[in-house]
View (cartoon, rainbow, N blue to C red):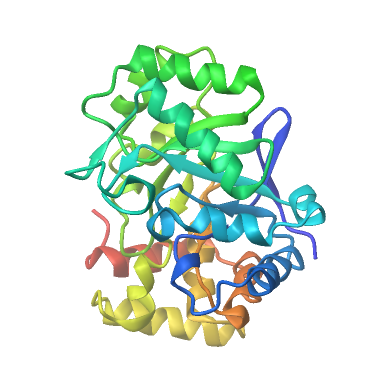
Length: 300
């Protein structure tokens, strides 16, 4: 199956839907064969981009992925990973007395080397700074990211959870264009659509990545409330012979900025349905209908 692709840099593109590996280490079965089955299920739908982070799975998810990556699979996927969160577990156990961020050159370079080794790859397609660091020296961080690109260890760099002012601060000290910002966006997290976070990226022609596009699953379970929203999602899903989750993701895909939803699930049947969202038709009024239900009131 073919899927739309989004240009990240001149020599790099991602599948419109990204498979998120945040919970990869939470699965009861983390064997190479099972992880390979998940990747193959993605590839059958044209989903080629895998989203990782050094801290996922208590700093174990990258290794779980690496154990499953055959030479063939490495050639067929793009890998996103992240760094800068330091917590006293995994390789940082006994070294971090408090959870913190580290955007120093040394930490970034050591994190990248560890990611390359654990995943068994020669290059990371996209490296993201995971969280804004209030102690960041933007000149040091920017130079480290530029050097990683020029060294060939990293193809492109970006950020995650940055506000526009954090983004421009880091970019001001860099030669390389930051390629994206991965932020939380969903029908249960609609603030980026009006607070400037999304407009900032759209103005610059930078494709946004959306983590937790189903509100951590709460949209589907009702834990986040939004009873009327869930009812309408169910109605649209029935009309288009699909699942509620696909409609919620299609709502993100409808936005003209080219949002890339990062979808995370360990269930093979659900993985096989991730591309359903790309087939859903959604007109402007339906988009605003869901947006209004998420707001809880009419637009002004």
